[in-house]
Every structure is written in C-alpha cells, then in structure tokens.
Image (spheres, each protein chain N blue to C red):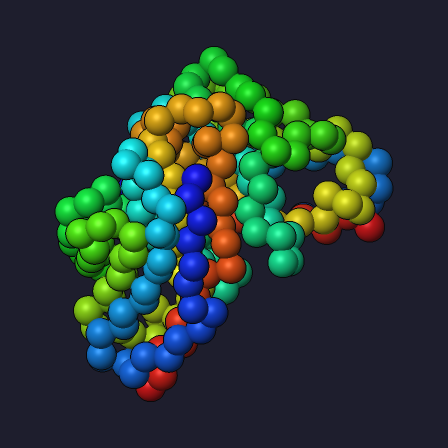
Amino acid sequence: NAGVTQTPKFQVLKTGQSMTLQCAQDMNHNSMYWYRQDPGMGLRLIYYSASEGTTDKGEVPNGYNVSRLNKREFSLRLESAAPSQTSVYFCASSEWVGREQYFGPGTRLTVT
Amino acid sequence: DAKTTQPPSMDCAEGRAANLPCNHSTISGNEYVYWYRQIHSQGPQYIIHGLKNNETNEMASLIITEDRKSSTLILPHATLRDTAVYYCIVRSNAYSGAGSYQLTFGKGTKLSVIP
C-alpha cells in the first residue's frame, strides 16, 4: 500500500515549456487534490476532483489544467510554465471531500 | 472555519510525552479538530481528528476540552523523527462551497525533539 505517489520528484523547466505532474493513489479514495506550497504562504489549493469524472477550480487555478484520468489518477498540467510557478506541488486524496487528506511526497518544480 | 492559536515552538526530550496545545474558542458545533504535521521537505501527514470525544490512534491521542474551546495533541513517546511543524485545523466536514475543501494551514507549532 504505497498511499499517494507523485512523479517526478524534481523538475527544472524553462519559461514557456509544458509538463504534466502525475499523481496516483491506491486507497480507493474518491476525492483528489492538487496544492502548491511556497515559502511563507502555506498550502494553496489549485484544483480538486470531488469524484471520478469531476474537477473544479480551487484558490489558484490560473496557468494550470487537470485531468482525472480514472479513480486512481489525477494529473496536473502546466501548459506554458512561468517563473511564478516555481513551487513545491503536493497531491492529496481523501475518501470523500471534507474527510482527512493524505498527501504525496511532493514535486519540486523550478522554472527558469 | 474557526481560527486556531498555537504556540510557535516547543521542545520535548526524546522518549517523553509531547503535549501540543491548540486554542479554538470560536469553534462551532459541526466543526472537527484535525491535526496534521509536516516534516521538513515532506508532504503534510494526517495525524488524528475528533469532534468532542477524546480520540486515540497508533500515532497520537487527542484530548478535547468539554467546552471544545481547546485541545491537546499528545505524542506519548516522542522520537527524533517526530521533529516537525504540527498544525491544528478546525473545519466542518459538510460542504459549504468550493473553499471548504481546502486545508488552511496556519503557522503551526514547530516541535523539536531533543536527544
């Protein structure tokens, strides 16, 4: 039981490049989330998926898109990376929205 | 969500119990108390939650006062691996708009376990 896994662990992009962050959970959870964490800013919700087939914007969705591929997988895409998107990205899942969330190890992204 | 107040830092000797307090005097009847921690450079980790009864799991115990205005997280035998920032969060499990799904972490308590 790996919990929540994220790939890659580290990534460096040049401004304007695109990439997809992958997240998978093996806990049969219905809800999944993408957060970013910047120094001194705490966690900010980018997008979430309350259940398979649905996605909704969080607090800071601009510049990102998401896909709930199936119940297990929830990906985050940066279409045209900007230096302001340099951050640590965490994926999380919960049995249902509002329940306790379980986090992955994070992806450290640097955009130069 | 109700606001919480935690001390910015605490020390605890290895092997002793760590008692982390949290004040949440404006908590409402349908709001739960959640505890998470974040070890440096790792993802946040769920620890425990409760509504009004004391709770215990394999990681910790949660003691909630009768008036629910404060709580204490207890790590019974702290180890060096428990050094982390601990966050007390008060939130309802009911849907109240998209923002209700976001976990709002305050500044938390930085717990240092001393050898």
